[in-house]
Picture 1: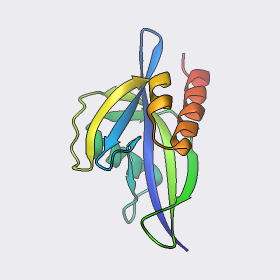
Picture 2: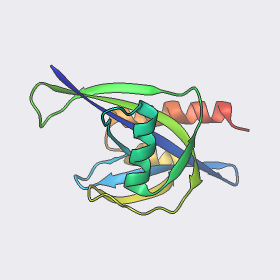
Picture 3: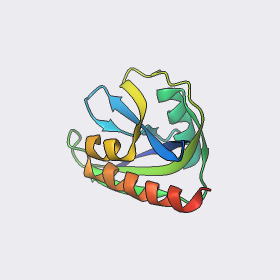
Picture 4: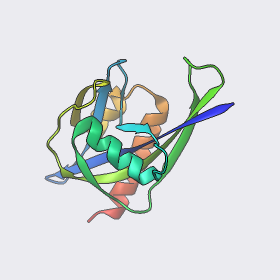
Length: 139
């Protein structure tokens, strides 16, 4: 079994006490979070930062202590497992612009809207864990 590794961010912003999360609509129709393949010599965190900027033009400051990982078998590649690693980041620059051809849209939505709209159970679980972590660690 071969592994592919991608790293990304669950990015949040807080407006009048309400948390909003950055979601992306990919060209294959999936709604999820910005992520991408690790390049040679890159750390997981460096990959997540680069992919966030490349896909959405958003910049985030990491909320230390959160690292979430899950794996799944790629349906379109035989004998390949996808490993996904996510961090949580606070939005520090919100000039959203879809810069990659595989990203059709990117926007901040409420927790409830994101949970109901995310394509995969793994990403819904990720968001719920990230939301709980954020609420426990921000002022």
